[in-house]
Length: 539
Image (cartoon, rainbow, N blue to C red; front, top):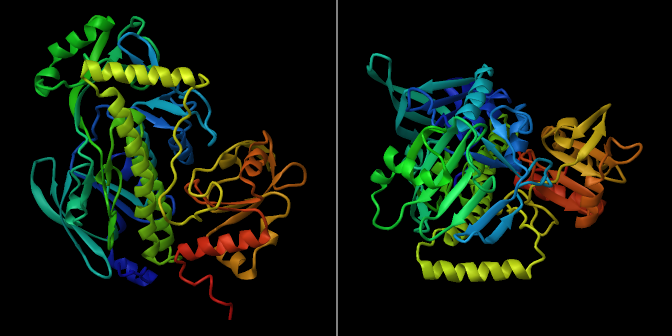
């Protein structure tokens, strides 16, 4: 791909905005907020005149809680979010446990493993944060219909419909366009970015319920009923809500199954009826597994469902999209601020595709367990999984850990490419999670010698260009006190004295000594395509 370069500040005036984002869902809005907080101009357009007020995603993991905390949204204490001290159970029709997944613990990243939320309320919160940023503009009723780019910029054309249903044509000239416009993404199609499709298709009916009073005992808080008669999912739907998901069986009419009459008939065995619950939504969705092989073409990029789709059994679909936003935001910030060539954007797709493929494969494996409608096949599954559970130590299965695909992290370096841990620390008279007390961004964390004293003059200069910081962590006389021993235990486990942390909380590299730290840092800085080659000898 031909590298494009950031224009001088004087030439930026030819643009209506720095980044145009097509799609005002959680992925597009989060990206706009992250860029807007860095002072970049962002215009978000969405074809729908009003926000979508029906629930869709209902769960996110510890990493997303860590991301939301950047915006001041505390998942442990927020009216739109809840958590439950319960495992994630998979049971057969006889009530026998096939699998237990640990969805109740606090994860290594410092937040609870799993949260449940109301998507309309969370999206409203994100839009409110965006509205406070003077450089972020949201345009509704704006349908993208054209996309053209050249060496200096990219133009998205759209049809804008006003309150009187009068349509006019507009164009937005930007340095970059990001398509966060869903599974049928216009931007992806305009950029001619193809999906790789696994051919994994299952139709499921989603019923979102608002209890009017206490419901009968529904079993565990979140569980899968692996019954070949009707595979079923029962989970929270966020505060004050419950969700049922039913697989559409072969030969059934999805439209008929989604009717209100059918919905109440399916809920009857659970003791749920119009007297004790309100049916908020009944809709059939097709669960699919696919991803785009390429996530960028020139000045156009894609994120969220525009780039990938996965079955919901691991609860990672929206999570993956929000990770896209964070990974893309810090790269675009470097480019738009003139600190990096936009070749750094190429690693966005390679890293995120590798990560999301892991979760798509994982979700498919889970789907292959539950989406069994043949009684004999289900019986064989039950025998195998019960035997596997009996031969284990009985401990719940830990939540999955995924690594980034190839990119700006050092392969072969312990824990690199994975989400960093987070513990309780103390600094400057404050105690709390590391992110809140120490901060976020590019950080070299070390124990023993201060990392700042070990860098070369050129490395120190380039690290400062990234607004990078060096933090010595330990006990007494350190920058940061490791209150609960999280970092000492982590560094012991991976055999490291230093960790290079990225703005998205992922580990770029680890090192056990000064030479290793300097070599690793050179590798990471070179991968960032900074506007001055860090590996070149000083003049």
